[in-house]
Amino acid sequence: MKYYLIVGEASGDLHASNLMRSLKKQDPEAEFRFFGGDLMKAVGGTLVKHYRELAYMGFVQVVLHAGTILRNMQLCKDDIVAWAPDVVILVDYPGFNLKIAKFVKTHTQFPVYYYISPKIWAWKEYRIKDIRMYVDELFSILPFEVPFFAGHNYPIHYVGNPCVDAVDHFKTHYAETREEFCSRHGLDPTKPIVALLAGSRKQEIKENLPIMLSAARHFIPQALPRRHRDKHFQWIIAGAPGISEAMYAQLIGGNEISSLLQVKTLHGETYALLTHAYAAMVTSGTAALETALFRVPQVVCYFIRCGKLVSWIRKLVLKVKYISLVNLVSDYPLVRELVADEMRERELVEELNQLLLDTFYRERMVHEYDQMVLTPLGEPGASDHTAVKMVELLRKGR
Image (cartoon, rainbow, N blue to C red; front, side, top):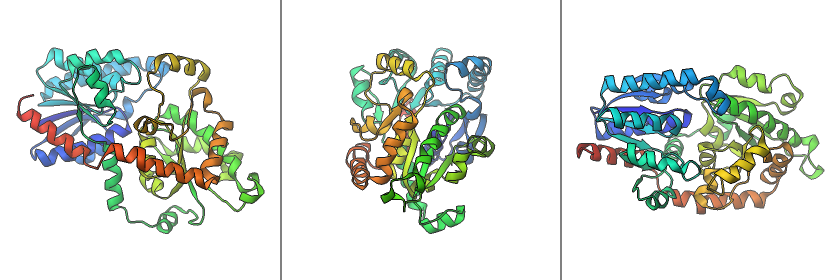
């Protein structure tokens, strides 16, 4: 069968590539065409448009690139019609994908499947109307979404979480010791590593990374209380796919902070970095959940301009207590969230003091990961479960 997939960011590329591998197991003749990324391309098929050309965030960026976005959307619509797939599989990215879903259902006979549901439980709950009308089957990766959609009389399939799959697959095949990892990257194996996961988009990296680095300077040995001056931390940035080394160098290079911290950026090594990390500063999203699956103590950070205004709007608009997937899955403030006007150097330093210097605090967080995050998410196999169900439904003509 012919599968047309659409993703709009790095995490979608990862999860869609795993789904494609699983679809191949169920359907050896599977053909793929997609708006996606390098990981999907490596599985096989035709890359029509890279997600880097789609990933605009924030109102201003969207307005500035409105023409490009509309052209990409028209290209996608025309390409779907021309290729005539057996199914269109949308992966997250609701602003773009729900418009594509509407087009496909109103102009073609192709079924529309949605993998990784739009987060309408957080905001824009009115989108349930579009989902009911334009999405034939929805495959959820978060356990709390099942009762939410059931409350809207829209049954969905909970298939497990693909982050569990990806992390489990990595751990199964990764055999590098800490000493080998540090030797390969010129790091000191005796110094704890603090991972900086500052986002996957240029704008969020530009806004979050400088604050992370400013907070980090409070933890060079000479800045610490006397009893902790034997601690020497290494600050390592997880380079995002599609973001150049030059951009990171511009943000961290040539200033006092970077020389004191000796910051390094590693590309394509996020899971290896988390394997050996002592703690992490993480922007909200998939990365926070992955960090928990590696059992790394973390703080979730997300700076937004006009933070006070955004925080006020957030209280009015958002329908959930938390923004990080870790806290949403556990339904408990397991990790601290510093968002909008709370994402300031002082607050970040305060939380890092506990993450880096308080053993009990660190151990409690890891224990709560095990009990309140890993258990609800279930065992690995989300991609396989999804592929089995999709192929079964398609063969039944649904």
